[in-house]
Image 1 (tube, helix red, strand yellow):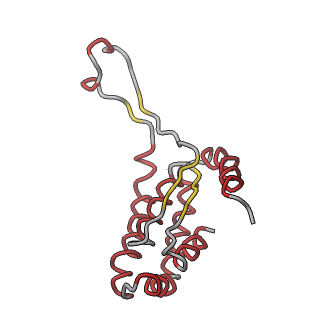
Image 2 (cartoon, rainbow, N blue to C red):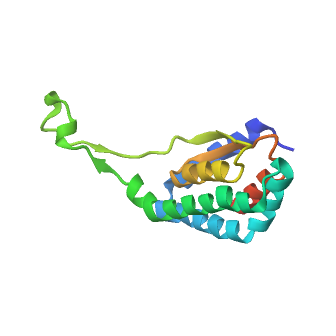
Length: 158
């Protein structure tokens, strides 16, 4: 078994190559995840029901569908949201007029996500998807309550 430091180190080594890929290529993993999410819906709902007692219907409505929708949003909008943007002239201080500036979105490296227990699929999966699409590596510590849904959610990303 590997330690947390070894896992984060491996994530740090892999992250620059991941960040170097185009956004459209990073979105392929989100698309595969979203499709896997649909096929594993019954298993996820059963796991959440065992963990926190939430009904299948509520888990679908409050966890699975919002996560699938968040992934679809990323698939449609991430390329536009992450592209460089010019800074408007009216947003510059007077002493910088005449300058042309742009904002470039850059990944932070490895992002740590501390998982929640109350919406273990939506809140965890959404943050992971956003971090990965932005080019970051993810070190995720799921909630100790999510002993069944967290490994299942993790397996959907593989």
